[in-house]
Amino acid sequence: MTNYKKILIKNGTVYNVPNKKTGVFDVLISNSKIERISKNIKDKEALVVDAKGKIVVPGLVDVHVHFRQPGQEHKEDLRSGSRAAAAGGFTTVIAEPNTNPPIDTPSRLVQLLKTAKKESIINYYSKSATTVGLNGNRLVDIGRLKTAGAKAISDDGHPVAGEKMMLNALKKSKECNILVTPHCEESPLYRKRQKRKRENLRNFPDSVTNKPYMAEADFIMRDIGLAEKTGARIHISHISLAKSVSEIAKAKKRGVKITAEAAPHHLLLNEDAVKNLGTNAKVNPPLRTKADVKAVQEGLADGTIDIIASDHAPHSAKDKKLPFNKAAFGLIGLETTLGLVLTHLVRPGILTLKQAIEQMTILPAKIFGLDKSGIGSLTPGTKANIVVIDLKKRWQVDVNKFFSKARNCPFDGWKLQGKAIMTIVGNRVIMKDGKIIENI
Ligand code: DOR
Ligand code: ZN
Image (cartoon, rainbow, N blue to C red; front, side):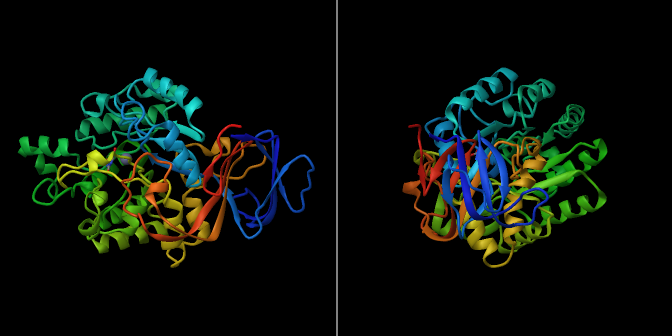
């Protein structure tokens, strides 16, 4: 990485400065912190970056990524995942705990965060599992995991099927002031278990019958009820169904402490994509109908869904080159999310630029409590996390150029407009014009 004592970003249109309207300003970084944001800053010692005609925004925040470390580093690791993030304009990620072994004890989390300090070039945080081994039977030690640094609890890949278990998780997380991020999805394991215990289906009339992976809204309704009962805060991962959007809208109106995210693939692709893309369109929750896609877009536009998160889920070619029903679930997204959002949500007017920026910066930072350290905004006095974006830059997605180790991207070949051209963390320029800058 190239380290500088001072960096001066000149004449960009600057977003998300507390108490300042968006406008053309200079941003001075000194000793890793944002020192000043105003017009006509001059500094002879600083590295000067010309951002005329570009936008300067807080480093993007992705609260839902899989870096596969520990255990499946051949798919992704902290090095490759954090470089993919930097290339896509992200300076902060929160990783899911479904690694191998899963992050379900304080010592595993502490070890992971220690390794990340050395290997990740961006701010890396992790969630912890909700239940030991992600198997839904016993709660993790939520209090100690929070103390060890967990930013939320999540049984990624699995629903917490037992209602009592979820109730206890919510009670405990309220006590410990940690966010619960339910994955309202069916896992193959869950479906197998449900088939064995047919009587459980009474609670989930629509699910695990003939319809594939339709339980999302049922679980959301259940978890809304439990959040209401306990007063705990929940954040629903990757919304994919119209029914989920309407249930969340109703809950928000009643004052339930609920937020939600949507992923680019659920915002832009429908079930027909599977025909052409095969297993690169296999994801859980699955791609849905056109009507669902429209509802998820509308939910994001009207604030029912709060934020955008990629659910970057790297898999090896071996795990994807299998018959559809045997292939792994998941798609990568860190290097395409920004371009997709700008081209297919902002350009057509579904989201305003300001809204899209907030949904990828200050809002996720607030929901996950990262805003206090300045993440998600350009606040003088806090650590610099900045991305310079060229809204005019046209480019074509080419999976072979990704910094991610994985290639399971359904957007390969898409022509996009708008790209991160510089990513800064502290006093380091970590990405410039699509190149990761390693230590010199
Ligand atoms: O598509 C998915 N991929 N859904 C999940 O729930 C898990 C994830 C993964 O870890 O690959
Ligand atoms: Zn996930």
